[in-house]
Each structure stands twice: as structure tokens, then as C-alpha cells.
Image 1 (tube, rainbow, N blue to C red):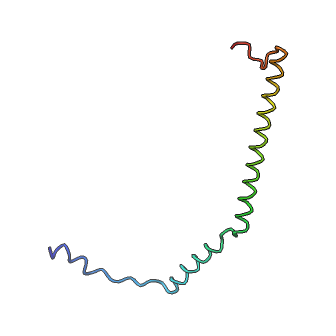
Image 2 (cartoon, helix red, strand yellow):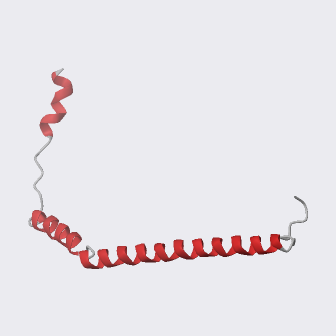
Image 3 (cartoon, helix red, strand yellow):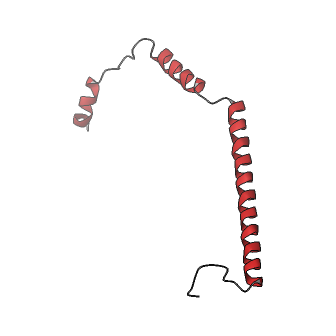
Amino acid sequence: MKDFLKPLESIKQVEAPLFLFTCIQQRIQNELSNRVPMRTAYSMTASFVILLSINVFVCMQNNKTKMEETNIAESFQLMPDNNLYK
């Protein structure tokens, strides 16, 4: 067993370069400073919600208009679509 552990005795402690801790802290600080401000994040979120609301409203109105067109076409006994094979 001692023969296996003998190579471990030759291992020496490694010294870290000077200012390593300072460099690590500076990198962490740089990453934190690259964040998006909360005001910008809230305004972007609000604009996406407004855009989504407008999109849903337009889709609902479009669907309502198509239903009215279909009802008018059926009342005049016209084909509501161009599909010949039903």
C-alpha cells in the first residue's frame, strides 16, 4: 500500500497567481452590470401584452366577419366557400 501512496508525497502545493480573487470579483461585477434595467423589462412586457391583446381582438373580429359573410351567403343560397367537394 505504501508503494501506491509514495508518488503522492512528491506533490507540492500550488500557489495561485496574485490578484486572482480580485480578477474573479471584477468578472462577477461586470456580469451583474450587463443586466437589463427593470423599467425596460416592464415596458417590454407591457408592450408584448398589448400587442397580444390587439392580435386576439383582430382575430376575433375577423372570425365574426367571416361568420356574417357565411350567413349572408347561405341566406341567398350561395356557396359560402369555393370547395366543390364536400
